[in-house]
Figure 1 (spheres, rainbow, N blue to C red):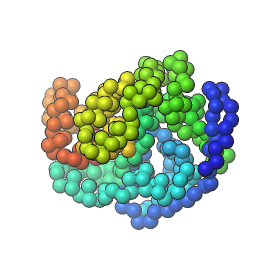
Figure 2 (figure 1 turned 30 degrees about the vertical axis):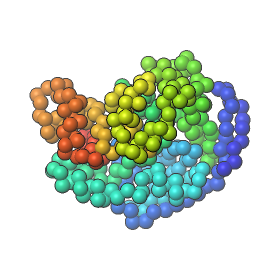
Figure 3 (figure 1 turned 120 degrees about the vertical axis):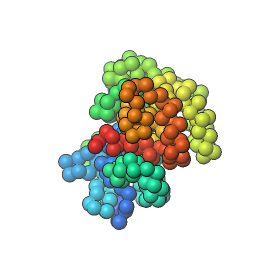
Figure 4 (figure 1 turned 180 degrees about the horizontal axis):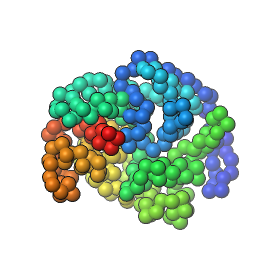
Amino acid sequence: MEVIHSNWSFGERNILKMQEQIYKIENIQTFSLSHIFECGQCFRWNKQADASYIGVFGNNVLKVAQKEKTITFKGMCEKEIEKTVTEYFDLNRDYEQIKNNLSKIDKPLKNSIEYGNGIRLLNQDLWETIISFIISANNNIPRIKGIIERLAKAYGNEIIWKGDSYYTFPTPKQLSKATVEELRKLGLGFRDQRVYETTKMILDKQVDLEELKELAIKKEIQKIREILLTLSGVGPKVADCIMLFSSLKCLEVFPVDVWVRRVMNELYFKLPEESKLKRIQIENLAKEKYGDLAGLAQQYLFYWKREA
C-alpha cells in the first residue's frame, strides 16, 4: 500500500493507494447482505441501485454483491482480500450450527432466526465501534451514518476507487485534532463533548484498547464492561453493543434497546406497561435461555421485531 501525504483544511491527510482486488465465495449458507448490513450493527455500509453494498472498514473499501449463494467482494484492500473478508465477515464461525442450537430453545426464537437467517456478526474495529455507538445514543440510523461520514471526511484518510473518494474512520490521533466546537459543527449535538473526552482518554491510555482485547480472549466480560463504562458517553447499552459488535466478540452480552425491550415483553414477560420491564430482568432471562449465544439471539430478535 502506498501512502501519499496531502494538505487538508483540518490538517494533514493521507491518501491511501492500493491495488483493486476481487474475491468470490460460492455456496455459502449463512450470508444475506440486507440481514448483515441492516440489523443495526454497522453504519458505514450503503445499499446501491443494483442491491449491492459499498462500505469502508479499516483501510479498506469494498463492494459486496450477492447472487443466490455466490458472494463477490471487490475493492481496495490494505492486505490480502481473502484474509480481510474472512476475518471481517466472521467466515470461520459455524452459523448454521449456531442457528440450529438456538432454534431448539423456543418457537419465537426459531421464527426470528428464519426471518434473519443470513445475519453474521461483523468483526469491526474496536476504536471505531466505541465512537460509533457513542454517536448512536438517542439517534436514528440515517443521522448516525451522516455524522460518521462527516467525521471520516474531515479527519480520516482518503481512498480513491473508480474515481470516487472514500474516507477511513479517523484514528484516535487524527480525531484528537478536533475541538468540541468542530465536532459540534459536524452535527454531533450533545455527543460532541463525549466523543472529545473519550478520544482523549483512549489516546492517553486511560483506557487501553489492547488490554480490552486481552480481557476478551480471557472471557472477562464484567471487567470489560466496567472499563468501557468509564468512557464518556458509554452507558450499559452502548457498552454491550461495543462488546458484541466489535472485534471483542463477547457473544454472551444482550444489548437492550427499545426494540429488544418490546419484543422480550411481548414474547415472555407480557407486562401491561412495557416501560416497567427492567433491563436486569431481560438480561437475566436472556442469560438463562440463550446462554453464551445471547448476543446472536438478540440480533435475530431485534431484526425480526424491527423489520417484520
